[in-house]
Length: 153
Image (cartoon, rainbow, N blue to C red; front, side):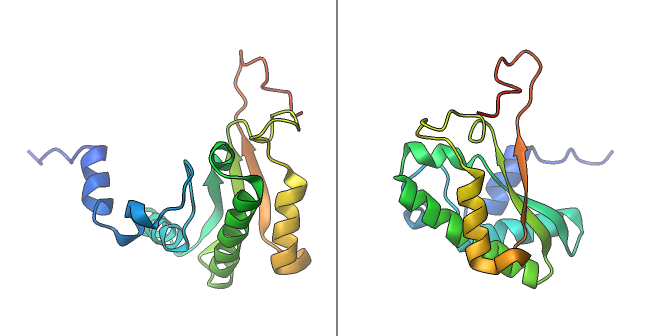
């Protein structure tokens, strides 16, 4: 009988605990950040895990959680740096497009501290790559029974 595969947590710890990109001292304050070397590490890991040379859509997940930790200008600078990397990944033919996957960011009222504005994000992408930018997707959580599932603020 074949040995049992390791648990998901064992796989994670084996593959990432010593990775330079995950050393906490390199991460700026905030619940989630996107240092370039971390994004590059995770993109390459995804390509390897999928056995693919290119990913159709690469998502940055739950960016709105950073807005409780850092001021909006710092957050938008992080977005700009992440988008710069993702546009370079498009140029390297590792991804075709990128987007934001959020839990609440696009569903918050505009006055909420953790609200995301598609216009702000799209402007960053357009400033970096013009009309040919590759920020083309958003993903929001829609759940039956969630009284805000269809409320997009």
